[in-house]
Image (cartoon, rainbow, N blue to C red; front, side, top):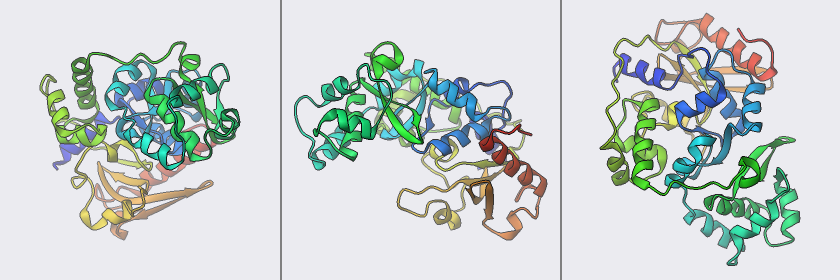
Length: 337
């Protein structure tokens, strides 16, 4: 992939950090931010803004501007509340949820309304609190899959963390009304293509299919009315960036070989559903990184690609030092660089 195309992708993904965007604007532009792991999702905002704080993101979550819901690929994402009706109408799927509920021994014709009754008027509830209210109808992961089934029907969402644990909320209580899914599928598909391309161009229907979980044929249908998004050939190089695990820059396209050398694929995707945080240099993955407490460890693929420098290939040591300092400041709530 030419450097200008990678730069265009980084710009489309806001990795050039345009000033002034709030959490809701970042989510609306990206369409959805993977939030299976909340700390990684917060770091995805950091990678795209030099000023946003954890407190501002959490405020947007508590104020319902952004919502944590089962979205593309059936995975938890942050979605702007205005996009819930049409995006979830396309991406929601209960097949896997029903199968998992059967495996957990949770059966009955009243399952969606069971959660509806248990959550209504209760505010955010943890899994343990919800299990208690269900009075034996579901336990453990069965509770989570039961909420996911209710979410399929527009009845439930995830609330803010409580003591570091997920919470579940009644959709009508949380948003002021139940989620009313967009009935016009063609209209929703057209919106999906336009909004996906805004954050992912250049891209193909196969890319949209991989990102959304929709069949390729459906993605091609969506692409037809969408105006092509031009690649900005004058985009500036992206510089260095520490992107979190499951970042949209890695999850947004079907083929990752333009940004990740096949020799290093297992270092980023070791298996078991793990996707490690990555070091980006001008849009190319040059290593992985990890953190434990305030300690951030960089692991470049090759010594020449790491913090010793090496021009655009490895980034400069000052750039990495600033990124590491910014991660620490962001997570600690200290003033950012």
